Length: 47
Image (cartoon, rainbow, N blue to C red):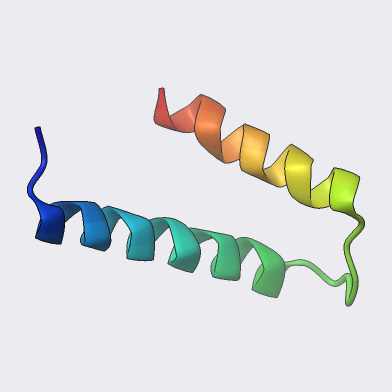
């Protein structure tokens, strides 16, 4: 099981990954459904 500091690092990595995805997009706004789809895609690739 990961330590607490490793868990925090993983959380930060996921947030940064989301930041990169949003930043790479030309869109300025996202719907809830679009954000959920992005989160699903990340979760699937992390399995």
